Image 1 (cartoon, rainbow, N blue to C red):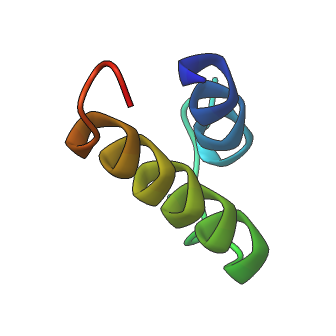
Image 2 (spheres, rainbow, N blue to C red):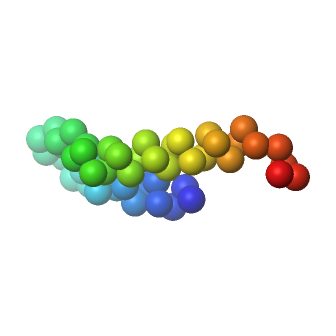
Length: 49
């Protein structure tokens, strides 16, 4: 789960100095928000549910 988040962020993070990276593309942002929403939903559910 966090691996996927890291993959999305790595695509937008520069590895070398240079110009500022572009903002997340909408597809990447949608994927990131869906991941966060899913994780928050899991955290809100009781452990035995």
